Image 1 (cartoon, rainbow, N blue to C red):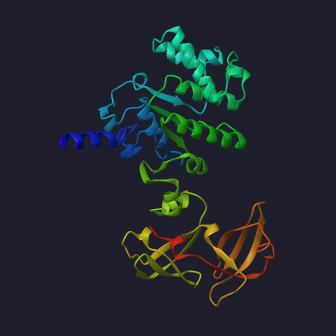
Image 2: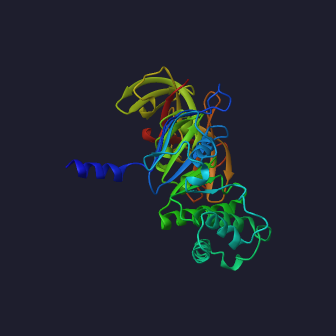
Image 3: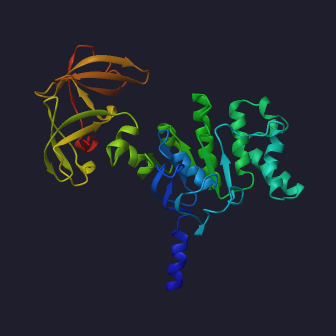
Length: 369
């Protein structure tokens, strides 16, 4: 019985663990405050946050380029805080590609294998396989300055994978690419992750990139993880005001909390309108003043104007597949509504009075701090 239990624990154990990790560069201010994070084998985990939030510092500590001031980092149950970067067996992809300019594509891919002492035949096989993965055979003899940005990024990705590491770390790898190429590379990286089953830890400040690519996302804020979860859970069920405001677009209205019934709250908005919202973001507290956060696509417009629930259309912005309708509410309050570009909504005109509503579960309430 105990033997089976131990085996199951090993199977379910995370591949990488940060335990009470802190990082300070000057011995005074903490860049990472108290990081506890478990990364599963084979998952695509994105560290998302604004500049200075601690996400890149976390990646650099995992890579071995920085050491924690305090705490433990384990991989496969073994401490790696003092293991040098080149002995951690992790592939690394940087935003600036970091390719050797004097080497061809094939030579760039062969370099990490030669540094590991592989023989010429094995090097050739692995280089061929890596070029197959990123479809670069035709570019094998070209140098980096003869490649486009997307091609260089493919080479950098192939070089990180060529020695078949258990973990690949990516630091803003698509930041230098244009929008279309960036989206194409997002798809390619995700497909490679699925086919190889490798663990990927990915750093970005781009919300859409994190939501598109990740199994889970850790949202960093001031050296801590504000929320860790699937893209769906972060977007649909933010646990705090920071995550609600950082992920995606929101309307923010302030008001006074009237009552709480189960997971629903009644709120009197400063606009003089009584509305309902979700109490989950209050975590059991009953503050007097609250912030109501509702996404533009969750607001429902109607031509039927109800007493106490009407607004005037201030502007309509055409964006091809959808319209952004700006509404003026009483007492200088405003919200934006995102509606599909179809016959139902093409009749809306500036200056028109419209009704609006939302599901209480889509309106998240948070204490004003």
